[in-house]
Image 1 (cartoon, rainbow, N blue to C red):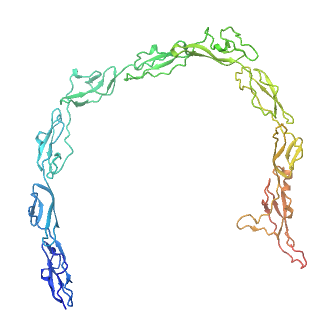
Image 2: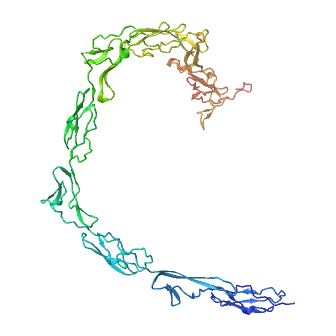
Image 3: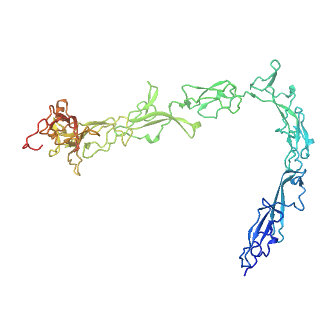
Length: 600
């Protein structure tokens, strides 16, 4: 049986479908927007119950209108908002732009809508204006309401000047200070210029004078600098202006150098700007030349040390000082007892009157010099140093099987020894000498090893020949021979030659030139038989160079008016190296061979 439809499936807070309850099959109803929702375009929609509906739970087919929520006025709006000409705006006591927002807070059947106003902030007075109490008077600007102004002024001793101060009409922050300017524009700040009266003569600081002719400040005698005119003005914490004297500095002596027991600064104490003094050495030191210390012109730094270079201080010449090294009092050289030949009282040293200096005595070696010794430089005494007894020279490490020096355990100072080669090695002997003033117990020998050559091998070695006492590579071998003859445990050498390699015959290349597009070297066309044994030694002279070349002919039945020419690579020791083709014959078949001719 046919049954009526249930109510349409729509939001009953947004849509009014009260006339659609219990629609009979085939019946329709109107659906409208439920305030505060309002239609956007079509004012109403509809719903229709199907004509053949048999299900009492089936809703009708609904086509509701498009509705939008229009915020209702709040019942108790904030005092910062007023509605004018249908629009919410900020009240005169507030600043900003009013916004409305609303939302559904409860569903059907109450359908409550909550409207919220925002965007307006209360205008408040600006914070009190702050300024330097000595510079600017802001007493008129203690509390400014939004949109009001006051006047700030420069206070004495600053030049009188005023500026407007405004609290912006849009101020909503009680911490914001007012701003310099007007209601229409602002400036950064009020700039006040401090004024100082010309100082009384009693107020002049030392070092400054006023030049009435040039009307400028100048530095007094004994001072240097460039003081400004006018002088800078400053102010005390008690708001009293005063002149700042600056630009002149007092000329002062240079500071004394740090004390040093080697140098004599007696003449340099308190040296003034532009002055100079001499710096020499204190006993027991002496200098051949003194140096000059200078205090710079215009010095104003009391800590500035004078400019100076230290003199070259040496020890005082030794006369009757004690022996420099008691360990040498009984020292002996290898072949003589150290003696004092000049009677100086200093064992191992003698005075060279011609050169006016000290030198090592006979049987002593080294370099004599005087050195000041003591607990520190302030308690030093001159001492002779540098000469020690001479000792025999030690032999250097020698090959036991090569060098004959068995008769020498050590070479005495001033003596020579001979170094020769042990048989069967051979070579020219050399001399080794020990300097007369040698003090090096572990060396000191001046020597050169003899050039010990290997003996000839017991049997001939292929590729090597000896001519006129000199070994060389055989004519068909390439290289430079080197003889190796390491001895065995019994010092018996076994000579082996290295460095010579057999020369190799070069072979025809596949193309000529041997590159892309070159002429093919056909074995049936070109005859290289003349090159089968051609080699080229890099040692050959001009008279033998023709041996490096070979002719290139044509295989029968081909012929050419002129043969070709090839050259073997000089010094070739690598198999498969190509011949250098200098010229190919122009092989041509002028007459066909008889049928019984042999194949090429």
